[in-house]
Length: 117
Image 1 (tube, one colour):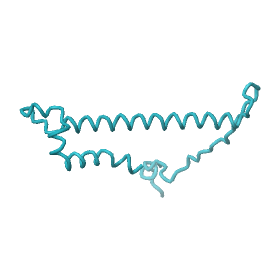
Image 2: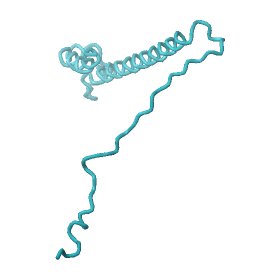
Image 3: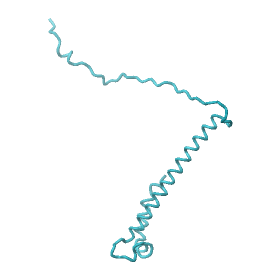
Image 4: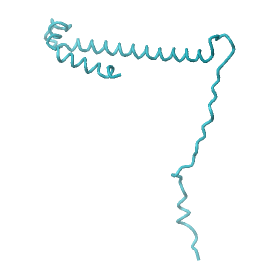
């Protein structure tokens, strides 16, 4: 989990540390110095690759969880899925208490009433 959080800052740190080497050897626009790229194209490419890798990892994690829940369900039903046996899970109804300390009162009746003699 910490690795995912630190990937992008580490890419920026690597870029700042090796900026001279990246500009001289790895930059796509190193032959065109008037563009003032200074290795930003290389950094953008690396960030795009990291984002794509993160999306693939998230997708594979989701699919793994999805298939593991499907296999858990098949384990509940049993090894023979052709039978007409179904697993029903019943939940007890939830009862809500609507009494609250913040009930509204009719304060007008407390103020406006006939005089007491």
